[in-house]
Image (cartoon, rainbow, N blue to C red; front, side, top):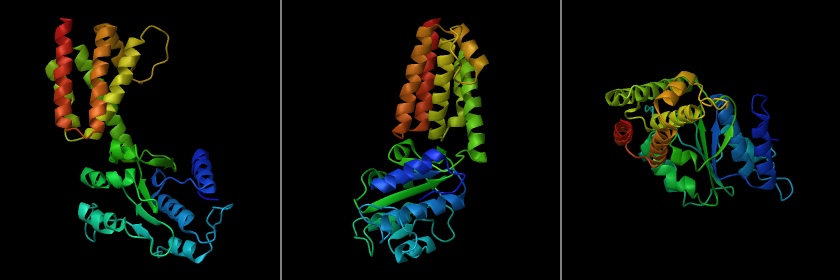
Length: 299
């Protein structure tokens, strides 16, 4: 049985082991949360699942005892590649990814039936690197498995996440993630109050933290949609979704439902375009212009 560590959620354990037994492990996997050591251990277990030489048609679980499994665990198997930054570098480069990963995709495995590429720390992987991997992750060769490991998902592009099967190993909110989440909530509330004040310049000013941060732009838009939903449901007895009661209440007093729906439509477009890697400054400008138009139509 894989993923036996007690801190791993039960649903994850069941999902992984069911996929292994059925021979249906995804080719592109995201291991999120937990410690670095736990993510690395689980990544190697997944590698063993596709490289073990003692599995058969009825028992696909890796034995963890054969030569292949032992070499995977020791980091010595020739078909397991750990993709890390060059010596002395903090971040993974496109050059390293091309030479150590993409260039090997068309080659046959050296010894086993599969090749496994492990990316140990994706929390700060640059967008240009992720985009270089995107097509391969979406349509990997039949003999290839990608395993991405991260503390929290906020460092990965939406387009990449959508192509991965995620197995959470524990708390995915690092201290950095929690700070980012707090910043998202704070920014969304400030924008909501600026909209209540009918302050076009204030809306632009409160959007400033999202400059050069597309992920935050999408997250703030999603949070604002929750606040708007709460505003539209104000007085109906429906439970709040956003946790920003004052902002929702203020919006409900400042806007008719028709205007709130218009703002929500703008936010939906922002989220969609952020997922397509649109320039974040352009998205902020568009949001400011569209909300300014809605404000003027109300007057």
